[in-house]
Length: 235
Image (tube, rainbow, N blue to C red; front, side):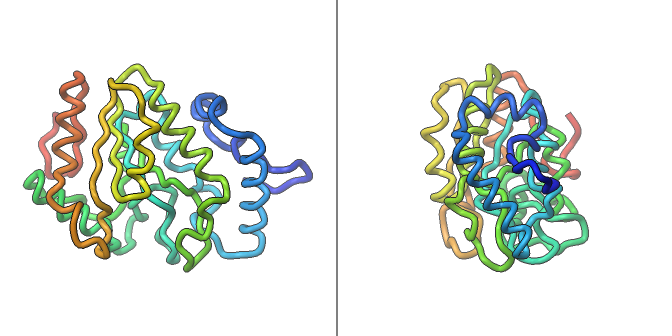
């Protein structure tokens, strides 16, 4: 994203397929106000992720290939962690506590070792979109960009996936994510709800078996399962 004499409009930086799909569902005035806010925040504050990673979830998960959406809240707030994908961190970065709990659940659900790092881009390459409801955050301040307009774009993303003819599995962890369930109105899709995997949440996530349930929903619709871990057999 480059600041120029022309006002920045954040939808202009979405990949073409996603921009076309979400545009009917967004409020241009909200996006314009959000765009001004985000530009000013990057100019005056330390903001995560890097500007070039804001739309990483969309670049790695083309609309036509997306078959699972795992919805997070907002990016990680510590240096080096956020790279535009919910729950994921770049290679070499220690696995954060929430993702550690996700990995523990994967081990119990599937009986396999989780990926060797916190980088989940291999999931994205299989049609798993790792989207946060809010795509930027001020360093050290969780939810600091909540309510500024990102939700208009990410809700539009859910609505665009809801319009898909093929099954999409929507994975909603935590109260904020579960509040998005009414956006999924097409009965061809599947919505899986559970508590947030944060260690601050003592119950509601562990034992929810999300990985096997996602794959069962995909297979029931004639789609191949996701290979969540390198330890899983290839399909």
